[in-house]
Every structure is written in C-alpha cells, then in structure tokens.
Amino acid sequence: MTRPTPAELLDIARNTLLEQVLPELSGAARFKALMAANAMAIARRALLAPPVAALDDPALCAAIRGGAHDGDAALGAQLLAVAEAQCRISAPKAVE
Amino acid sequence: MDEVALTDWLRRATGWADLSLGPMALLSGGAIQQNWRLDAAAGGARHAWVLRTDAPASLAASRSRSEEFLLLQAAFQAGVTVPEPLYLCQDAGIIGAPFFIMRRVQGTAAGHRIVRSETPGGGRVALVEALGRELARIHAMRPTLPFLGEKPLDSGRKLIATLREALDSAHENRPILEWGLRFLERRNPGPGEIVMCHNDYRTGNYMVSDAGITGILDWEFAAWGDPHADIGWLLARCWRFGSPHEVGGVGPRAPFLAAYQAASGRRTDPARIAWWQIAAAIRWAVIAIAQAERHVSGQEPSLELALTGHIVPELELDIMRATT
Image 1 (cartoon, chains in turn purple, orange):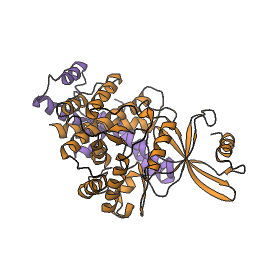
Image 2 (tube, rainbow over the protein chains, first blue to last red; image 1 turned 90 degrees about the vertical axis):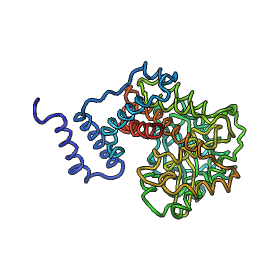
Image 3 (cartoon, each protein chain N blue to C red; image 1 turned 30 degrees about the vertical axis):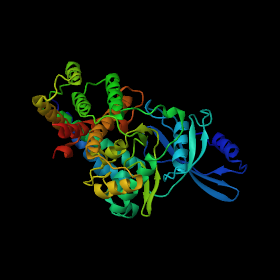
C-alpha cells in the first residue's frame, strides 16, 4: 500500500485542521471545523478497527421481534459486544 | 430570505406601517427547524423577536409550524414559561415556508454549556426544581386542538408500534433496537393516566439564564401520552451531555421529582420512569437514524446529520446495558 496509509492521511489531515486551521476560526466556522475533525477521527478508528460482525440480519431482527429470543442471554451478550465494538469506533468515551 | 416581503407581511400583521427590520441572523440548533434572530423597530419602540420556520427538509413526525404555534399559545395561556407566540404566517410564499414570530427570551439553550456551569437557573437544585414545576404545568394543559387526536389507551404500546414502523421503513437492520423494543413490550406497564406531553423535554430545549428558566422550546412533538414519558426522556443518559447529573445533566433526581409531585399532585412510578428511560434511548436512536438517512440518501448532504448517525452505537450500548 502506498504510504502514508489512509489512516495516516486522516491523522495528519485532522491534526492540521485542529492545530493550524482551527485557531484562525470562530463561531459557526469553528463549530463546523470541530465536527469535521470528529468525522475524521471516526473514519480513522473505523479503518483501524478489527472487523466486527454487526449481526444486522433481517431474519434475526424479525425473530427478536416475534419473541423467539426472549431471555436469550447468549444473544444478549453478543449484542452487548456488538454495541461495545461499534462504540469503540463512533463513541470511544462510552466504553472507556 | 426575502426581507422586503417579510417586512411587508409584518407591517400588515402588526398594523405598524413604519415597521423596519434590522439584520437577521440564524440562531444555532434545530436540524428540523430554523430559528432566526429578528430585531424590529416600529413606532419608536424596539422589538426582540425570533422567527421560526422549517429547515430545508423536515421530518414527517414533527408538527407543522401552525400546529406548533397553536401549542405554544396553549402553553402560554396555561402559564408554562414559553416565549410568547405573536404572529403566524401560513403562506409559504412570503419567505419560502410557513413561519411564526415569537418574543425572544434571555439566556442560553446550549446543552454543553448549561451542564458544565453551576449557575444557570440559580444553581443545580433550583434548576431541576423549576424543571419539575414547568413539567407539571405542561402536564396540566388541556388544549382543545383537533390535530392532537384521540388520547391513546396505552401510550407505551403505541410508541413501540410507531418505532417498529419507523425501523421497517429505514434502510438498516438494527437487532439491538429490536431487542430493546421487545424488552419494552414484555415489560410494558400498560394503560395509565394520559396527559399533554411535550415529548422533547430535555436540556437543549429550554432557555435558561442565571435567574431561572426563561422559555420551554420546541413543541413540535407534543402529544397525549404517559406523564412518565417526559420524565424518562429528561432523565435518560443520552440527554446528559456527558455530565454525571441525572436530570438532563444539570442536577439531582430527588428534588426534581419532589418539585414535580408537589406541583402536579401526581405520584411518579419509578418502574415507569425506568421503562421510559429505555424507551427514550430507542426513540432517539430511531430519530438519529432518520436524520442520518437524510444525509446518506443525498437528499440533504450535511456534516451534522452525518455525525448524528454515529450517535446510535452509544444509544445501543445504553439499551444493552439496561436490558441484559
């Protein structure tokens, strides 16, 4: 793969935004730059994260809704693990 | 914004032929609605107003501007602290969408700032007590507005059906939200008292100064429902803005509930509050998915809407922690 890697590019792009662009901004533009930095951080974590089974299967969704998994502690544990893995990408503070 | 057309319309609505407008500015907040700061001068007096109108794409679940105006009027008449509603324009031809004008109130609604400060509303305990009293006033409203429809027999059951319908029309399969909805279905406390609910009663949707609450905002989701629905929404972890304080990130639970009970005469049920807190996380997740979809579909490219989609995993974690 050509260096820098996609994650490395996002890293330097985000640092440049935060350290060299943000100090020049105020008000709504500053808020938007912070949102852009946040989006880059999420994308970078997603690139580096180990693959996770999202369990996003329509048949599973229908079975849960129909009551086929009531009290299914094993599925509960799996879904908790999915939520934690997705938070490590989207909201790492939630799983610290 | 066509300020000439707006000025003409306001001159007719107010009867002030010499009315003129200062520069307008878009206020922060509102993925569904836009709020514009409006300064008018007429007859030698200055008027501090807010113009509220639809954002370019609006969610079907939210009420029209005219319905929200009527709800705001009902709240104002019932003694809820709200910005006084002044003029409604249903003609989309004036500024491109229907709008209404309300009086501008002092203070801030910025959730992140409110939860990090000790002073808004006169301190954390005083603020949650005021939130309890305002909510009691909202729940005492008995508006006779036909668009509110019949009172549901079982508002928990109705919410589960509404959220499942929304998930079915979304483009994603979310087993965790299904898991949470099934959990709620099995533990539904069943029919109870039905009152006027605000349905978005949280930090970020009220204006507060150091003197107290200056206005309860955003009435677009108001409907008949279980009073515990508003309490569960305000107490839900997802509306604490990262703060440890249980009531909207601003203060403790006990004085909030005590003030609410004293003002409403209603005893709250901890089991129903817990049920509605889980319902709050699922409902916000479903709304967040719909907002992200507006970006993903290309209908309304927006960084803010795109990031809203990434709120969902944290809500799903709250749901799994509360149900396993």
